[in-house]
Length: 119
Image 1 (cartoon, one colour):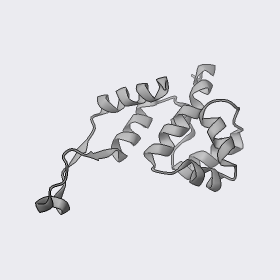
Image 2 (cartoon, one colour):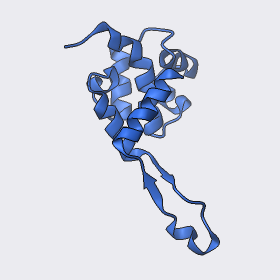
Image 3 (tube, rainbow, N blue to C red):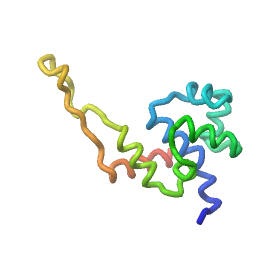
Image 4 (cartoon, rainbow, N blue to C red):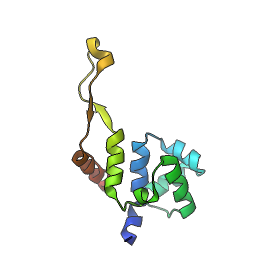
């Protein structure tokens, strides 16, 4: 069942999904046909978003409306987890081409998402 509380997280969820897709705010705004300022206001929950615009966002980010609405927060976390890799060690001269990558666990991603929602 849907709750109105999920509407308060729309902007935050869009921002999380945009960042996990490595798309800049300017690029997403251009691709959905709005100004970067308007997208910034959406991401900070300062304005409401139309269903038409929400569909455009979902299509560009390649996710479902449920993912953006946050009905299934695990979906968002799994998407971020799949795309969120960082270097675990500084690259030394002898192994520049073989730098190890660290993949975050689902629990670490959930904590990261909570921190992002608080900021």
